[in-house]
Length: 158
Image (cartoon, rainbow, N blue to C red):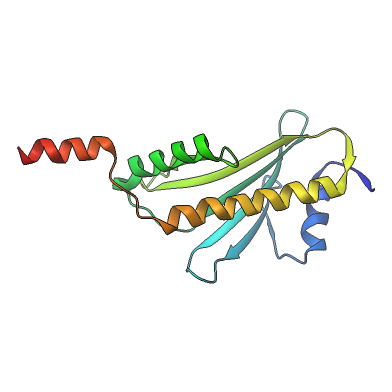
Protein backbone atom coordinates (compact mmCIF):
# COMPACT_ATOMS: atom_id res chain seq x y z
CA UNK A 1 0.00 0.00 0.00
CA UNK A 2 1.48 3.35 -1.07
CA UNK A 3 1.65 6.03 1.58
CA UNK A 4 1.82 9.61 0.37
CA UNK A 5 2.21 13.05 1.85
CA UNK A 6 -1.00 14.94 1.37
CA UNK A 7 -0.77 18.01 -0.76
CA UNK A 8 -1.52 19.57 -4.09
CA UNK A 9 0.76 17.04 -5.75
CA UNK A 10 -1.48 14.20 -4.59
CA UNK A 11 -4.52 15.85 -6.18
CA UNK A 12 -2.59 16.50 -9.37
CA UNK A 13 -1.36 12.89 -9.39
CA UNK A 14 -4.95 11.66 -8.99
CA UNK A 15 -6.11 13.78 -11.95
CA UNK A 16 -3.17 12.80 -14.18
CA UNK A 17 -3.52 9.09 -13.38
CA UNK A 18 -7.06 9.28 -14.74
CA UNK A 19 -6.01 11.39 -17.72
CA UNK A 20 -8.47 14.11 -16.76
CA UNK A 21 -8.16 17.54 -18.29
CA UNK A 22 -8.09 20.13 -15.53
CA UNK A 23 -7.53 23.81 -14.91
CA UNK A 24 -5.59 25.28 -12.01
CA UNK A 25 -7.08 28.41 -10.43
CA UNK A 26 -5.31 31.37 -8.90
CA UNK A 27 -5.72 29.94 -5.39
CA UNK A 28 -4.23 26.62 -6.47
CA UNK A 29 -7.52 24.77 -6.74
CA UNK A 30 -8.00 22.23 -9.52
CA UNK A 31 -11.15 22.16 -11.64
CA UNK A 32 -12.39 19.28 -13.78
CA UNK A 33 -15.56 19.56 -15.87
CA UNK A 34 -17.79 16.63 -16.78
CA UNK A 35 -20.60 16.82 -19.33
CA UNK A 36 -23.72 14.79 -18.69
CA UNK A 37 -24.37 12.93 -21.93
CA UNK A 38 -28.13 12.71 -21.31
CA UNK A 39 -28.55 16.39 -20.53
CA UNK A 40 -26.73 19.53 -21.51
CA UNK A 41 -25.55 20.28 -17.99
CA UNK A 42 -21.92 20.30 -16.97
CA UNK A 43 -20.69 19.37 -13.51
CA UNK A 44 -17.54 21.10 -12.33
CA UNK A 45 -15.56 19.33 -9.61
CA UNK A 46 -13.19 21.61 -7.70
CA UNK A 47 -10.38 20.16 -5.58
CA UNK A 48 -8.62 22.35 -3.03
CA UNK A 49 -6.45 22.29 0.04
CA UNK A 50 -7.79 24.45 2.83
CA UNK A 51 -7.39 25.25 6.50
CA UNK A 52 -4.62 27.05 8.38
CA UNK A 53 -2.21 24.17 7.79
CA UNK A 54 -3.45 23.32 4.30
CA UNK A 55 -4.31 19.81 5.45
CA UNK A 56 -8.03 19.75 4.71
CA UNK A 57 -8.94 18.16 1.40
CA UNK A 58 -12.08 19.75 -0.02
CA UNK A 59 -14.02 18.57 -3.05
CA UNK A 60 -16.85 20.79 -4.29
CA UNK A 61 -19.28 20.06 -7.10
CA UNK A 62 -21.26 22.63 -9.05
CA UNK A 63 -23.74 22.12 -11.84
CA UNK A 64 -24.26 24.38 -14.83
CA UNK A 65 -28.01 23.82 -14.60
CA UNK A 66 -29.61 27.25 -14.50
CA UNK A 67 -32.18 28.19 -11.89
CA UNK A 68 -34.15 31.39 -11.51
CA UNK A 69 -34.40 33.53 -8.37
CA UNK A 70 -38.03 32.41 -7.83
CA UNK A 71 -36.76 28.83 -7.36
CA UNK A 72 -34.47 29.66 -4.43
CA UNK A 73 -36.94 28.61 -1.72
CA UNK A 74 -37.63 25.33 -3.53
CA UNK A 75 -33.92 24.67 -3.98
CA UNK A 76 -33.39 25.29 -0.27
CA UNK A 77 -36.11 22.75 0.56
CA UNK A 78 -34.48 20.23 -1.80
CA UNK A 79 -31.10 20.80 -0.12
CA UNK A 80 -32.62 20.49 3.36
CA UNK A 81 -34.24 17.18 2.43
CA UNK A 82 -31.01 15.95 0.81
CA UNK A 83 -28.97 16.79 3.92
CA UNK A 84 -31.50 15.05 6.19
CA UNK A 85 -31.80 11.87 4.14
CA UNK A 86 -28.48 11.46 2.32
CA UNK A 87 -26.12 13.60 4.43
CA UNK A 88 -23.30 13.24 1.94
CA UNK A 89 -22.08 15.26 0.19
CA UNK A 90 -23.21 18.23 2.21
CA UNK A 91 -25.30 20.43 -0.06
CA UNK A 92 -26.03 24.11 0.21
CA UNK A 93 -27.34 26.98 -1.87
CA UNK A 94 -25.58 30.19 -2.77
CA UNK A 95 -26.96 33.20 -4.57
CA UNK A 96 -24.75 35.01 -7.05
CA UNK A 97 -24.50 38.77 -7.46
CA UNK A 98 -27.06 38.45 -10.26
CA UNK A 99 -29.56 36.90 -7.84
CA UNK A 100 -29.38 33.46 -9.48
CA UNK A 101 -29.36 30.57 -6.98
CA UNK A 102 -26.98 27.65 -7.27
CA UNK A 103 -26.55 24.35 -5.44
CA UNK A 104 -23.13 23.14 -4.36
CA UNK A 105 -22.20 19.71 -3.05
CA UNK A 106 -19.16 19.63 -0.77
CA UNK A 107 -17.08 17.14 1.21
CA UNK A 108 -14.00 17.79 3.27
CA UNK A 109 -11.53 15.55 5.03
CA UNK A 110 -8.91 16.45 7.60
CA UNK A 111 -5.78 14.62 6.49
CA UNK A 112 -2.84 13.33 8.45
CA UNK A 113 0.61 14.09 7.11
CA UNK A 114 0.79 10.59 5.60
CA UNK A 115 -1.94 8.16 4.62
CA UNK A 116 -2.62 5.46 2.00
CA UNK A 117 -2.99 7.16 -1.38
CA UNK A 118 -5.51 4.55 -2.56
CA UNK A 119 -7.77 5.68 0.29
CA UNK A 120 -7.69 9.23 -1.12
CA UNK A 121 -8.50 7.87 -4.58
CA UNK A 122 -11.51 5.92 -3.29
CA UNK A 123 -12.74 8.90 -1.25
CA UNK A 124 -12.62 11.21 -4.28
CA UNK A 125 -14.46 8.65 -6.41
CA UNK A 126 -17.18 8.35 -3.76
CA UNK A 127 -17.54 12.13 -3.51
CA UNK A 128 -17.82 12.54 -7.29
CA UNK A 129 -20.39 9.72 -7.54
CA UNK A 130 -22.44 11.17 -4.67
CA UNK A 131 -22.35 14.64 -6.25
CA UNK A 132 -23.56 13.15 -9.54
CA UNK A 133 -26.47 11.57 -7.65
CA UNK A 134 -27.25 14.92 -6.01
CA UNK A 135 -27.51 16.69 -9.36
CA UNK A 136 -29.36 13.80 -11.04
CA UNK A 137 -32.01 13.87 -8.31
CA UNK A 138 -32.22 17.64 -8.56
CA UNK A 139 -32.81 17.62 -12.31
CA UNK A 140 -34.94 14.45 -12.40
CA UNK A 141 -37.84 15.83 -10.44
CA UNK A 142 -39.69 19.09 -10.82
CA UNK A 143 -39.20 21.56 -8.01
CA UNK A 144 -42.51 21.48 -6.16
CA UNK A 145 -43.89 24.67 -4.65
CA UNK A 146 -42.88 25.27 -1.04
CA UNK A 147 -45.43 25.09 1.76
CA UNK A 148 -45.29 28.89 2.06
CA UNK A 149 -45.95 29.28 -1.67
CA UNK A 150 -48.92 26.91 -1.47
CA UNK A 151 -50.33 28.76 1.57
CA UNK A 152 -49.95 32.07 -0.23
CA UNK A 153 -51.66 30.70 -3.32
CA UNK A 154 -54.52 29.21 -1.27
CA UNK A 155 -55.00 32.46 0.66
CA UNK A 156 -55.19 34.37 -2.62
CA UNK A 157 -57.92 32.06 -3.91
CA UNK A 158 -60.29 32.85 -1.04
